[in-house]
Amino acid sequence: MADEKLMSRLSLNQITTDQWNLQEAVDGCLRHEVPWISVWRHKIKEIGLKQSKKIIQDSGLKVSSICRGGMFPAATKKELAERIDDNKRAIEEAAELGTDTLVLVCGPSADRDIDTARKQVENGIAELVPYAKDYGVKLAIEPLHPMFAADRSVINTLEQASNIAEKHQPDEVGVIVDVYHVWWDPNLYLEIERAEGRILGFHVSDWKVPMPDMFKGRAMMGEGVIEINRMRKAVEAAGYHGPIEVEIINQALWDANPNDVLKQVKESYAKHV
Image (cartoon, rainbow, N blue to C red; front, side):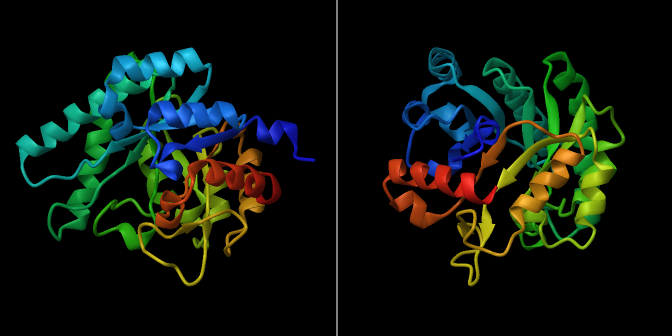
């Protein structure tokens, strides 16, 4: 029998069933008794914020986070300002949908200058903090695996994320621990301990060998090499007992029946998380 307390923390990160629109994903969660959902902004954009809010409110589901803000680095001041404006909209969306967590995928460098890009990330977050605080939203820095440094994020370790987060209060900026991105880090458990009080989310999937695709290659929990259960216990020891998002970006899952995918999510979550 699955641990009821653990199952009560299960959240469907919407990208796992990307073939569903927001209404379909919400209906799927209700049908499969998944109590949380993490909403992606491109799904909000499809139908508008007002309708998205109504769907969520009518369902009674809890929103674990909004994905995603970030993408800070840019080549010009105008572009940097546009990035900030987009993040402000993301903060507003998070507040409207009833979550206090905006996940930040921080973005790649605009050219080859990765040091400047990392400084732009730091500066962008600092600029957003007062705005986010006014809306009751926390900025959650998600470090991405180093293989994504060139095209998705120049923040690649939990240490880097915490170095930025610690410039702010714990109720302003924290970190996301996504097993897929950080499992390899030899300092991982020290950094999880260091992040006590700042962990704003825990995301699960698995790293299967061989990987079918760099971006769309995440596997279902239990199919790969990640010590997911050990990492869950570590983030809990560091004070995180919030929702656990199943975030699996995988083309084969997107090509499958999403109801079957969600059933498999629940089974593998219960067994391996």
